[in-house]
Image 1 (cartoon, helix red, strand yellow):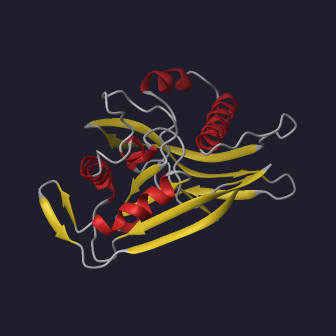
Image 2 (tube, helix red, strand yellow):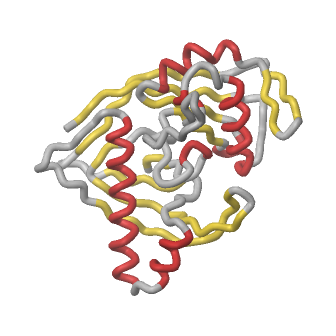
Length: 223
């Protein structure tokens, strides 16, 4: 099954930030637009978390501050982008003179006759620290199956977030090649993965998969 969804990318070409500032970017815009929609910060008015797939994501690929809107989040970003006149990142204010806005419709879904290969542009945060300890007890084959299963679940979570549900006959096939390393998350060192995967589904460039995708983790690009 295939589905067409709306997709927005906003970039600020005159500003350069370190990749680790993605969560500050999220915090700034989450506060700036707090009254507009829980999609922008994944919290409802009563403070409870919105647990669905994040439809607005904040990333810094190659140092370029980037906002991604997916599905419902796409027109929302377009309607608000004219209000963005500066960035305040950790007390440093960047005036915005230019911003680039791409709004398009993209196809996603199950592609049984064509395999797609993607790489993780930013680290894939796949496992909680408790899950990581269990992962270390497994042999190489078990670890591979474990990560393939988690990544398949991440893709299904994305599909569910944009209202796409595969038919029972449509089975995701996926093989990942990954290497683990450490990264900073909420002032802690956590285990993450670099690498790539091949699968029979079509996904948009620059969406995130896994944990903390609204902060820039797990960003993918098609190879």
